[in-house]
Each structure stands twice: as structure tokens, then as C-alpha cells.
Length: 293
Length: 234
Image 1 (cartoon, rainbow over the protein chains, first blue to last red):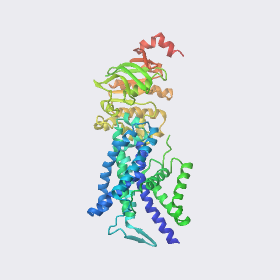
Image 2: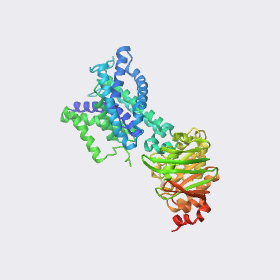
Image 3: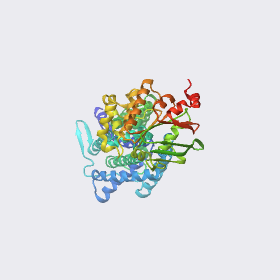
Image 4: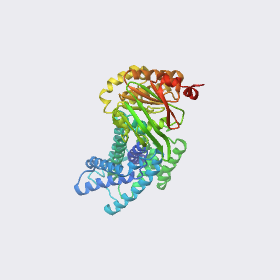
């Protein structure tokens, strides 16, 4: 029993790192552009396929293709912003969420159907030589690819924190997310901030996708599930702290995993949703968030 | 320096500014005065490209401002301090000031300007690492002005600088505005607080219901019986 619990704690934390990584991008777009991109999970799915095909056709190791996937999806994010989300950000702040929901749901349908058409509905996993390697610590087995995923998630959060706190661009980005009008009056090109923030958000989703196709699996319809998890994480953490998002991701993964062990596998999702409701009711600004006026 | 001619602004079908014209000469303080709802803030926001201009023209140092993105105006030296809380409360005082020098125009001289601003506002130097949201009303006002000065403006626009401040802070603010003009930066301010504004302004316009009703030097307006009757009689 102890071994089972320890093992599920570890698995929960490892999948929780992925929840955190997926949520980072979602929180960035939401915090800065005030848009809710429910197609975030589909961008993840595309990133996963990109790494899968790079490995299958050209034998490129997923850890090598990851930076390329980041760049490619950054570019795709730029295109999506310029063709779709730019128009959402021209509307009043309070209209952006509903407008972005409509547009991104459409994007979900388009990207999912295209994925089924071009990639088929099969579930894909990258199996490298090291895919089944695991560290054994005491009673617990830690798969190395999932551990690497957690490490990438933590590094991404620390990188974003550094970017936001220590660079000129980061200060402009925080100013824009607080009040875009005043940011523009300070001399910040708000549209450029929106463009870059959205592109980083898309690129982070894709990197998560690469890791998921390695440690877990991808198929055309995985997107919404991951988007939902990311949304729960953003609500748990609140906006404002990138580190907090990873912590909330780990917490969600852990709670799900423990619920699955103690209550049964079918309660995994229930635990997540109950957590979601409890936080929304009692601490709507999240564990680490500022209360927004 | 700034010339606005026949400016008209509407929110959809609701027009609130009707053919407003005014000028800000170099090295002067110009005030646009008028009651709440006269269209003062709307005029400024439209001028800064944050509201669509229906008709009219505006030029700053011989550049037309119509259709120019806001951030480029800041780079031209046209800097506006919006009404209330102009600083970013989630950024520290120091970060706010650094961000003030965001434009290519101001960036190379950031260090030098920062020293000047901290000399003008020693309180800000003491509070550099504090979040702007934790400052008092007066300190926030200093930060707003300091942040605007970081952009190295040629023309500083202030929207209701006296709003919500204690009388002593209002007086300090107007002293600073005079000092800024004396350093060679022109000032355009919008105010409801007529008496104070007329004391510091060189020239003033009175805006009512979206139209300019009269203008003149401060002493002319202060002596104008209509102005006295409408605004100065307490």
C-alpha cells in the first residue's frame, strides 16, 4: 500500500508538471491579452505531432526537435494572432473573453478535423531508446522522460519569471496586462506586446505537446482535455505568478492521483472539478493571485 | 507646439465633442477648464489616439497626429498623464520610472533623466523598491509625473491633476507643473478646479457641453464676469 501511494504521488506530480506547463501559456495569453484561447490544447496537439513526425520520419530526437517546435509554433502563433485574435483584442476588455471563446472554439473544430484528416485518429507515442528507462528510488519508479518533462516545465516557468521581472519587454508586458491604455500612453506598442505574448503562449503549448507525445501520447482529440486541466490550474493559481502556476499544476496532479488511488480511477476527474469549484467559491483570485479590481 | 482645429469626437452615435479648437504655444501652461461631463477627458483621449476622431485636425511640432498610434506620439515627445493612478500598481516605483523611458527617444538618456527625476522627487528615491500600489495619493501623483518626465516630453498633458488629492498635495502639484514649464516643457492640463488652474496657467479655454465657450489669458478669464459668475462664485 505504501508503495502504491508513493508511486501515485510521484506519477501525480509528474503529470502535474505537464498541467503546469500547459497552463503557463494559457495564463500568459489570458493575463496579457485578456483572451481565453480554448484551442490552447489543439496547439499542444500540433506540437506533439510535430515532434512525433520529426522522430518517425527523420529520426530527430524529441529533445532536439523541441526547440524547433517552439520556433515553428511561435511563428504559427504570430499567424493566428494576426488572422484571428488581433480582431478580438480590438474590442473592449469585457467583450474579449466571450469573443475569444467563440473564435477559439471554431479553431478547436478546424484543427481537430484537420488532424484527423491528415494524421488519422490513431494514438501516437514517440518511443525512443530511452523511453522506458526509469530511475528507481526506494520503492518508486520514476520514468526519465516524464521527469525531463517536469524539469522543462520548471525551467519554462523560471524563464518566464525572469523575462517578466528583469527585462524591459517583461515590464512592458506587465504594464500592458495591468492596463493597456496606460501602457500605450507610456509609449508601449501594445499590439506588439500582444503579438509576442500570444506567440510565446502558442510555442509553450507546443513544447508541452512534444513532451506529452514522449511521456504520454497524442491523438487529434486530446486538446480540450488538456485545456480544461490548464484552466483549472490557472484558477487554482490565479494570475501573476508563473512559479505559482507550476505549483498549482503539481497540486492538481497530486490530488487527482490520490483520488484515483483512494477513491478509484473514475474519481480522478471528479477530484479536479471539486477542487476547481471550491477554489472558485472561496478564493476566486487563486492561491497566488492578486485580487483584481 | 500643439494645434487642434475643429476636433469632433463621438462614442458611436453620441457626439460629445463639437468642433473644439485650441493651441498650446511653446513654454507655456494652457488649461482647458470646464465642468464634469464637458468633454475634457474625451478631447484628450481622442487627441492621444485612444478614441476615434470623427473630424478635425491636430498637429504637434508640425506632425499631424490623426491616425498616429499612441506609442508613437509618446516617442514624438507628447506625453499624457491619465486621470488617477497613472502608474502601474503591480510594478515597483523604480520599474515604473524605468518603463517611463520606454521609447527610443528617452531610452538613451534614461540614467540621466532618472537622476533628475529622483532629485525633483526625493520621496520616490526612498520608495524605489516599493510597489506603486502601496503609495499614498500624493506619492502616486509624484510617481505619475516622474514617470511622464522619464519619457522626456516636449509637451506634458495632465488630466485632472488635482482629482482626489488633499489641498496641500494639489498645491505641490501645481508648483511642480510651473517648475516643469520653467524647464522648457509645455503643459496642457484639463481641470475642474478653476481657481487653482487659473493661478498657474498662462492661457485657458473654457469647455462646456463639448464646445469651447471662451478663452483668454488667465487674468482675463479671472476678471471675466461670466466666468466669475459661473465658476468662481462660491
